[in-house]
Image (tube, rainbow, N blue to C red; front, side):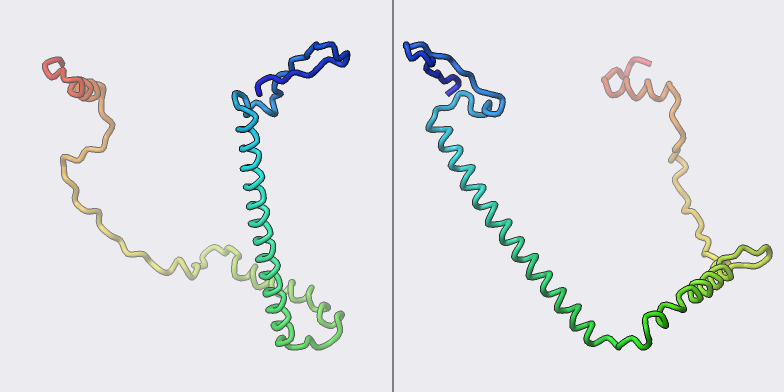
Length: 158
């Protein structure tokens, strides 16, 4: 099925060869039967995928219903707000102002004042004594060359 032939409009036995498009390149070198089998398998896979999507949507809808029911029971159990909307929201600015003042007092930097967390001192732990042969300094070029020679088996060079 790499090429198909269309009969010329004149109908005189002339055929026009047509090659596969880029969209159909994955069918190159296959027979019509193989292409049909591939399409049937893709169709089966798509149907299975649609079922999974449907199951997912059903589960999502059930979860949403459960959440809504839980929220409704919480709403019923919640105490009724007293007062009008204006009374309930009227003190918002004042509450903000009070909270800002408290934060400023708590977070302000004042020289000479020790912070509460600064009074706690940590425990000082001594470093363990290491092996004097443990040298973590960078190697010089002679050590690098010696190591390369040892890797290549050139022990007598150097």
